[in-house]
Image (cartoon, rainbow, N blue to C red):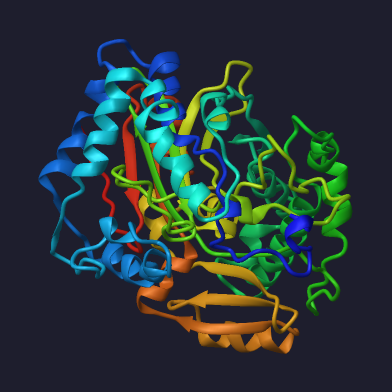
Length: 465
């Protein structure tokens, strides 16, 4: 990177070819079916529905069309001659238009027939290396063929009798757990849902959690990370003491914050098995580079590497960057934990904030899954140009709350409306039983009913099968 003139103060463009890392999703799909599948469906069978949608086409939904149009520039940039494969007549499809992707259908067929070799070796792998090489990248066929999934052990913290489980570093699941630990030091329910006190404490806790995550998070296969120290309750107590109820903190600065284009889903079957699942190209269409005849664009996850030599997240060969995507599970705290929920909220650095706001809506304020997703949210982000934190408040938050937060020294953007509300994340949740409802005698419920919720800010739905 330095040989090409890039530094921490002058990094490559977010959409530069150097930000492409080895795609991990296809290997993950294959390994998930192999390691955790029932054996009743082959990989071809699992991918069959996606192949059909790509071949026959699907009507583009409203929110998807909006984000497609916002990200279209990355596909049209000079030199990205194949970006039109993901457009209709060189334009983003509009809501209701049918989009077909026969090239992606063929890629998925090859993956189903040959497994990981159908993607990481042969035609698709060569097309990936070719398009990267044409644009000045350095990925090789060996980089692709040498990739494999890693089965990890999730990390967790306990909050009021439940355990929240998140992916470990290099994922930012750590940020969600740090945030929950800090908030545990306050009487959250007593503050009142979306009151000025509640949002003030939430915002300050988010600032602390994200700053710690951006400072200490990296690839554990390459660096030693102080995860257990950070998750210790005494550490969160220390961090919580720095929050004043009267005034916003000064001098809390994170690393770079950027955008997202992520898909989340969760499933629970009749045997009680749960899958909390998230995939992402990161920023819209990632780099906008489309391998010839493959039907997909290459992500730009490498944009989250640091170029500071001594940073835990500094770029290096074979290393994974700070990853924003996280999927969560919730269990009780019994010696043999029982599943309570599968949940996730898309949205880059909003994801840990979304996880915790939705969870608190249920645990502290007694909302059911759909109510917890419907409730107005808060999004905390860092404005690098202005060198300050910004609080985005969704429509539905009282204007008096926005005024009071400004008085305490916060920069507030209120109200956020329309499609811009997608910045607050788009979530899904399935719960086992109604454990959030304190008026119900849980012991008397021998039958566990599944409750599903789907975010109104997205095109998804909750569906039984």
